[in-house]
Image (cartoon, rainbow, N blue to C red; front, side, top):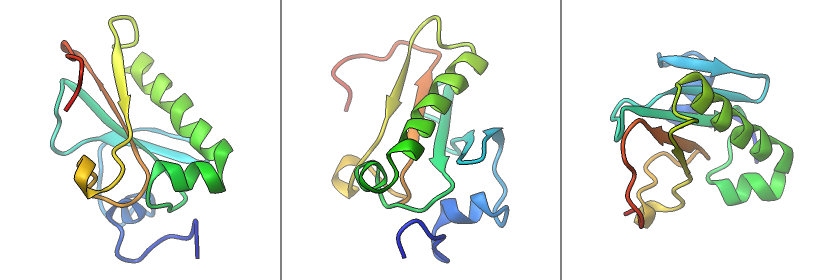
Length: 119
């Protein structure tokens, strides 16, 4: 059922506390934690507690929760002290774009120069 935790989803297990993560922020609708394979000095994932496979499906079903994810990305950037120097929020969608966990999530990246275009 859309939005329900998936037994085989790594991020659903983190939300439930079944798998440890270095959590930096939590709200009623989101969890933010450090990426285990950081691509920048600041690399935090912000995920919805609800399970949707990607940002587009989350936006279609739960637009206010997607807004919560984006708001928390900004809060993470402030907390991590990269908001003033610049940061990037990235949603990878599909395996071809580098998505490896099919639970919607935003990458908050900062703390170094981030060239354009990415990827």
